[in-house]
Image (cartoon, rainbow over the protein chains, first blue to last red):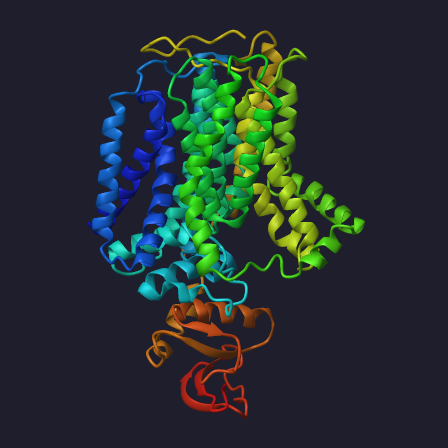
Length: 487
Length: 135
C-alpha cells in the first residue's frame, strides 16, 4: 500500500512537471514523451524532497509529498486551460508498406523483450547491483540517508576511500525516499529504479523521435539503443551512468522539440526551455559529469545565440536571446541544492588535489596521445557490441541514407545547442583525463566506456534527427496521422 | 520494404543491414544474461549483511570504528562490503580507533595484532577488538 502510494505520487508529480513544461495541451502522441519524462522527473523530485526534508529535520515525508503533489496539481490545472490545442500528431518521414512496418515493429519488440528479459534476470542475480560502485557508492549513500535520520550527513565522510562523498545524491535520495515509505530496506527498490531509468531512456528516445521524425525513425533509433549490450548491463548495475544518460537525452530531445514547436508557430514555448533546464539540473544532481554537461549546455546555448539565428528557420533573434533565461530558470532549483550540498555538506572532490600539478600535466604531450588513443579505442568498443561496433554502424547508416543539403543550410538552434553541448562535454572529459591525479591508464580503463555511454542515447537521437530532413510539426488541428511528408 | 524517396532500394538495403547488425548484439545481450534456472543471487548479501549481522548488534549505532582485514583486491572488496553492511557507522580502514573490526574471511586463524585486545570472536574470521592506545 505504502509502496503503491509512493509510486503514484512519484510518477504523478513527475508527470505534472513534464506537462507544465509542455507548450500545448497534450495529445495522444505526446503522452509517451510525457510518461517517459515523468519517470525521471518524478524520481528527481523525490530525491530533492527527501534531501531537503532530511536537511530541515522534517519527518513528515508523506505529508510533504502530498503537499508537493497538490501544488503541482493546482499549477497543472491552472495552466491546462490556457494551453493551446493546436498542432497535430507525429509526422512520418519514411514511407513503408504495411508488411514492412509490421516486420520492423516485430523486430523491435523482439529486441526490447530480449533486453527486458536480460535486465530482469540480471537484477535477480545481482540484487545489490553489479560491480563495486553499486555497493561502495550509490547504494551505500542510500543506506546512509535512510539509516542515519537527521545525522545523514555523517555518511558523507572522507574516511571511506573511493566512496566519492562529493557525488550528488539523485539516485540515493530517490531510493531512500521509497525505503522510508516502506519502513525498511528492500533491494527491489534500487533494482527497479535502475530498470525504470533504463527503459524510460528507450521510451524517451522512441517517443521524441516519433514526434519529430515518425515511427520508423524512432524504431530504428531505439533498436540501436536497446541492442547495445553495455547499455542494458550498466542500466541494471545500479550505477548512475544510465540515469544520467536519461537526463542528458531529456534535455537534448526537449531542445530539439522546442525547435519544431517554434517553427510551427506554437506559442508559450519558453516553458519547454524551463523543462530543458530542469532536466539538465537533474543531470547535474545525478553525477558530477552531469554538472559538466549542464555547464556545456549553457555555454552551447549562449554560443548558438551569439552566432545568430539559423538562416533556414523562422526563429527570430530576440527569441533566441531570450531563450537563455528560461533555461537558466529551470536549472536554478538543482543548482541551489548542489551548491548547498557541495559547499556545506560534502568534502572536496578528489580530482583536483593539486592545481599546480594539474596545470603542469596539461603541457605533457604524451598524455594527449594516451587519451586520444583511448578515445579512439573506446569509440569502437564501449557498447560491447557483437562484431559490428554500433558507433560505426550508426555512422555508416547515416552516410547511406543522408540527403545532400544545400550549403547554406544552417542547423536549428536547439539541434546546434545539443550537438555543441555534447561535443563540449566530451572535450571536458578529455581535459579531466589530462589532469587526473590518478594513473591515467587506470582512470581511462575504468571509466571512459561509461562516460561514452552517458552520451550514447543522445548521440543516436541527434544522428537520426540529422539523417532525415527537418520536419515542421504541422500547426493545423488534425485528428489523424498525416501522410508522409515529401522533403 | 521501407523507402525514403527517391532512393528506395538503397534505403531498404541499408535498413535491412542496420537491423541485422543490431540484432547481432541482441544475441550477445541474451548470451550475457544469467541462465534462467536456477537464478541464484550473488554473494553480496552473504558477504555483507548476513556476515555482519551478529557483529552489528555489538557495535554502536553511529560514529566511526576501525577496521583491519586481508591485503589485496579481495581484502578491499571485503572492506567495502563491511562498510555497506554497517552503515550508518563509518568504517575507517585503520586501527586507530577504540573499537576495531577484524575481518579475515579467507584466513580465519590470522593472529590479532599485538596492540589490539580481543573483545569478542564472532567466528569465521570475524572479530571485534579494542585499541586502548587509539587517539
